[in-house]
Amino acid sequence: MSDRLSQLQEAVDQLMEQFIATYFYIDRHHDLKTFNPKDTIAPSKADQPPEVDTLPPDVFQAGQLELARDLITREQQIEYLISSLPGLDNSEQDQLQSIKELEEELNVAEKQRQEAVKEKDEVLVKLDQTLRSIRRY
Image (cartoon, rainbow, N blue to C red; front, side, top):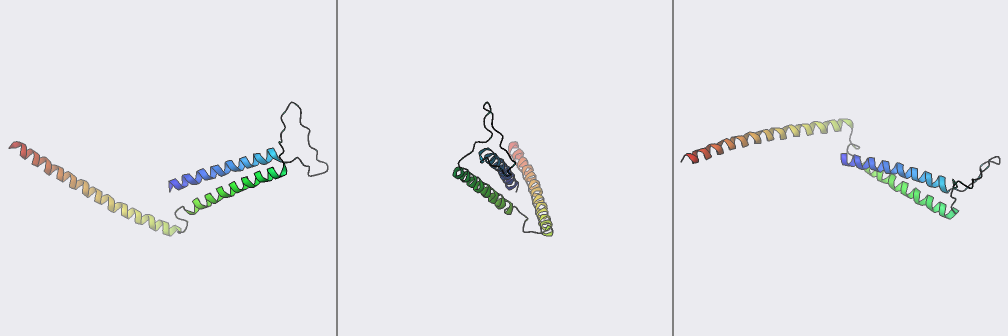
């Protein structure tokens, strides 16, 4: 699950980066237009680079379309990762029951491990005794 959560976090981070890149693309390449008759466009100074690098409308729209598709693809990837997380189809009670069952399985496995360690120790003692008796002869 932690791997899925890491993937989800990375995808969300990438989506935020794409949002920022899209915003800067639009901010940098939009057409200079006024919304109100009283609005004015400030003239750019000769010693400063222009704040807006206006692209032709078809190029600008193609860029917007590509950026929008990238955002949609990333959002769909995030939806897929969220849907693959465990527990979305289970109620809280079902999840608690599952945890209890897993705890019981863990207890059984721990008892088996302890028995195996005890058996190993007994076999080692017998082997040591056998080796000592062989050395005496």
